[in-house]
Length: 220
Image (cartoon, rainbow, N blue to C red; front, side, top):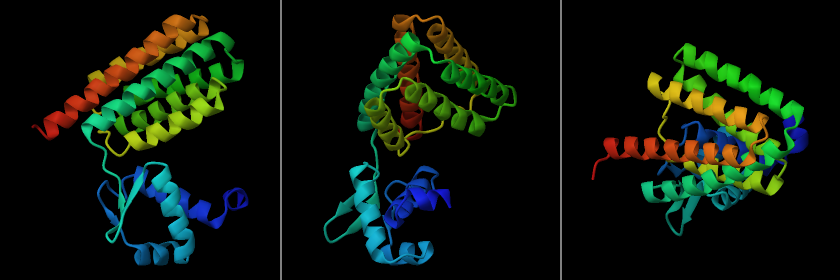
């Protein structure tokens, strides 16, 4: 009910299609069958076409004349570019957050860090991955820059079209957890410059792992 109050019908269709793309129900390169989707979602083609346009603008779909609508495919080069911009945005967010340190946001990040530690202890890569995304999104949102947050979320969704999970290897989980702890400690200490450097390095290391896995899966 709350979602219906917030979103129009095209907005609801957009949100559902986005969920299907980001959870892997619709894969990069998949062609979207307009008639089948309209029937599945219980809507006419009008709201569905509006959702297609919105998701194309968001960088998740592409429309080809006389061919149809497809889930976008992100190649390694574009993924690397997106990761570089994302790293810079996170550095700016960490710098701003370390300067303000709102208590509620810090408490939330500490709670998420504890949940990450628990996921690591359980060797639960899927839960760790979801919490990792939540930790970073919370950190960026807490910086209080709405433009930065909106751009960051857009890029995270796009990178999801390419990204292979980096959180299957227990050693990677441990390294990632240590890095999150250090980033949060620097923010709490108010060390804006060091927090920015730490989170940017963390993001770029994640990029390197992702690209290495992609290369191993699809060697040239």
